[in-house]
Structures are given as structure tokens and as C-alpha cells.
Length: 208
Image 1 (cartoon, helix red, strand yellow):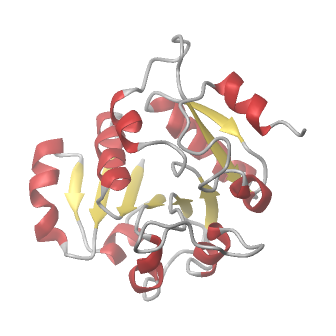
Image 2: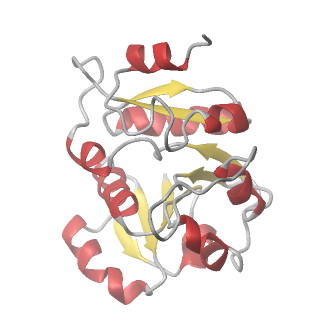
């Protein structure tokens, strides 16, 4: 599968390693340009190609967006060609001072979705600490395999992302639709940044 990553920080860089290790072709982009990513690509191997953001979108079936919340419009506003692409929104709404931004009744994904018109948006990879993502993947069926929640209004897109999560060593958990499911994944929620198994995650997500 061809996967694009916009953002090369903790989550973006870690995901590039995991996706490439699983055999996918990865194009990774950031605001500093492809040259700044050459060392990372060399370290990971031939499955990763430094790219401009637009090239990453154009060449990929799935695009993981892992950029700072405060730079979302700058990073995504001029990109085109989102129609029918699966976009994984891994952004959390933190201010530059790393405070949780008050979005009222809206979720961060609603703002991101407006910047990727026509995309099949999935909320995932935003609740797991990047060091756990990097180091704690396990084979299917292993004890204490950590889980990652997945929310979307598109069942087929959700299934693709869930399969990808399983492939890199984590149990995907269907977290419902994009808005209410995504709301339960936001910073400050009971499942955010918690090392939970699939059973534990489902318990936390169950209606009370």
C-alpha cells in the first residue's frame, strides 16, 4: 500500500518506521522540505521516500496527518487532491503552550475535515504515546497487546485503517462515528494516553 505522512515529528516519524517495516511504501513530508528528511529515510530504509506534501498526497492511498494543531491551516490549506483518499487524523488540539484548546462543542477532527474536502476521514493514532507506538507493538493474540481506537463515518475506510493498525502490532477498536467517537479520543478523555488493551478500551468506551 502507498502511504503518505504529513508531519515528521514523534507520531509521523514513528509511523513511517512501522509502516515501512510492514512492507508499505511511504512518502513522508514536513514543512522544512524533503532534504531535511533524508537522514530519517536513510535510517529507515528504501521503503521511505522524502517528499513534498503535495506529492505525498498525490501518490498515496492513505495519508496520515500528524502535524501540530496550530499549523494545520498552514500545512494543509493549499494541498489539493483529497477526493476519495483515506485521511487519518492524528492531530490533537494543543496550543503552542501545550494547553488543550477549548473548541466548544466541536471536535478537532471537524476542523481538520474541512481542510481535506472529499477525503474519507478516520480519527486514529492520536491517543497513543509515541514511545509506546514505537516500542510496544506485539503479535496478534499476545498478552497485554495495546489497543488503538478508530472512529469514522466511512466503514470501508475504517476497516482499512483497523487492518493497518493490526498489522503494525496493535489491536484496533471500532470507536463509532467520526464526531462522537472522535470526541471520546480527545485529550483529557479517560482513554487518552492510557496503555489499554482492547477489552479495557471497550470498557472505558461503553455507555455509562
